[in-house]
Length: 83
Image (cartoon, rainbow, N blue to C red; front, side, top):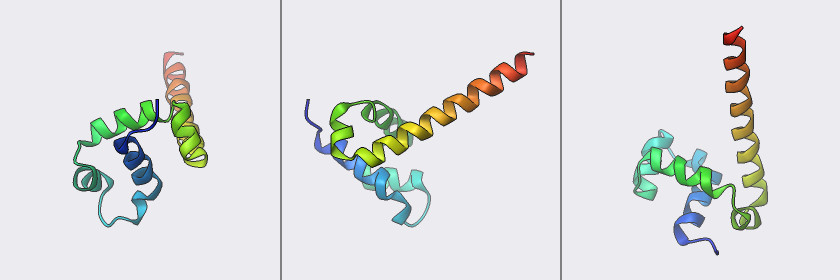
């Protein structure tokens, strides 16, 4: 299924949000008109699609690496706390 305009806007925003003044959450609300929670939910699903990978491979790979690193960190802390 091809990317929607919203999908492309989310990817573009994530690739360039640092150029915005102020907090990212405020920019998500003002630029995309959605809550930060919804944005991250959609972004998380989006980066797992082949269409997003084709649209901006470098961004998607970077976001997947960051997500995987956070997941590994949570798992290592969880296993360290148990023993």
